[in-house]
Image (cartoon, rainbow, N blue to C red; front, top):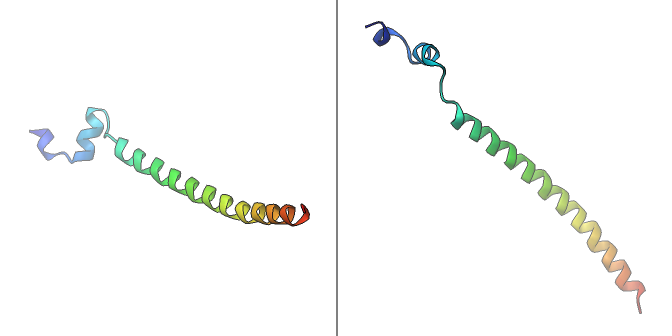
Length: 62
C-alpha cells in the first residue's frame, strides 16, 4: 500500500536506483558528434594548406 503512494523516483531510490543508461548513451553520442565536427574542421583547414603546398611543388618541378 505504501508503494502505490510513493513517486517513481522515491520508489526507484528505495529499490536501488533508476536505469540511466539511455541518458549516458545520449551524452556519449553528443560528445562523439562534437569530436567529429572538430576533426572535420581540422581536416578541411589542413586540406586547403596541403593542396597549396602540392600546387607549389608541382609548379617548381619542370
